Length: 240
Image 1 (cartoon, helix red, strand yellow):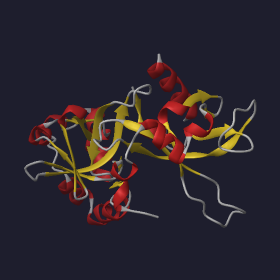
Image 2 (cartoon, helix red, strand yellow):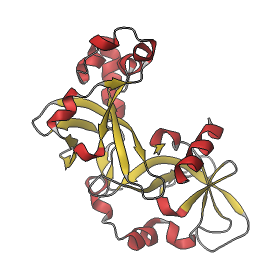
Image 3 (cartoon, helix red, strand yellow):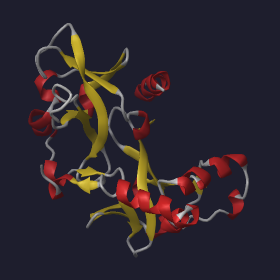
């Protein structure tokens, strides 16, 4: 299994000359920006890749690259399926409804009975099938670094609704993992995950910064228009 955080910012190389035709040489296309999930939220279908600005000034739109079209290479990942790797051609080949696909990163998470849990900050997934193993939910700020994130199994996911990831009520009782305090064993037994209250305890300013930053990303696509060696090792292990 690989974590999405291990893919963030990874360089993407595509055949030189275009997005498409097979080539023996590859050029730097951009960097992985964010993962895109299937409409049911259970599977990574690909990534949005941010491209360098034109002349350093003109912003270009992100390109969608299908998960099954990339493979590890020296310095990043390489696109393998030509034109069918990108955008509309990739979406048609995968048979996905783009407007219903989801970007989970940064989205609020809550249980189906209304208990807010925090923000989706990571996920572990199978690099071959895209199937998600677990979602990581935390406050996204100082408190998260202290007490860690809650790992919610994909089996507890119940869908998307009005800007929220919905999960089983049982997710509210899951224990924390990671974090400075947790790793040090200090107060871990007493640590209780309280969603956004954790950010408040870490400091009002930190909590407000998290609200502004994380909510801007997580979304359902149709609602809006318009360290490397470690990564390589983990990617190859996951593929094997």
